[in-house]
Image (cartoon, rainbow, N blue to C red; front, side):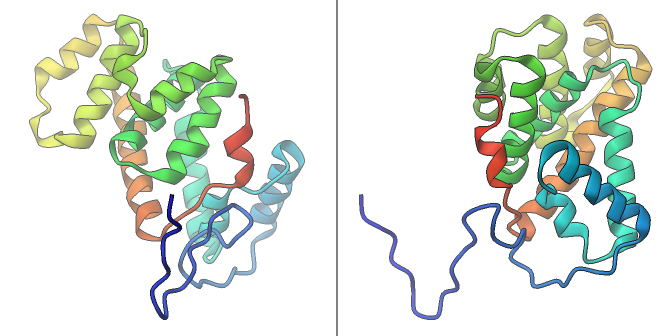
Length: 203
């Protein structure tokens, strides 16, 4: 296989989590004690600061809002399990071909499910997975939100109800899918790269 030739004047692209987290040259802001403590907790719990947080660290206020919204969507009490929320994140990110989120949240699916194959299926083609009716309905709704949100109608919400989701659950499915559609687009726009550690977790 030939090595791609670099054009004259072309800047090298970062290839790992050891490089800067995005293609933009944004200096880190002075973090508030709250956000610095959050970074310190990441280092303590998982051994690194996720590059998505490092990317937002050029603006302490934006970092705080992003982290709070993410934690509320993904970790707060919900009719959706943590695994289900991560499955939505990966299925949406796969539809959008978002390298960062497929890798980072694919690792979370592998960890939470204890099933590396499920993590790979979520990242490549969730429709090929042996999923429950509940999960197939959930991911079908999230995928339609991603590809054709203007075509969602009452029958799509009713399909979720028939699969056992409450109206509050439907809100949460939509909120997680919408959040990752936004995050995917930001990650692609700034060439956000996942930390190296995600690639080997729970395999």
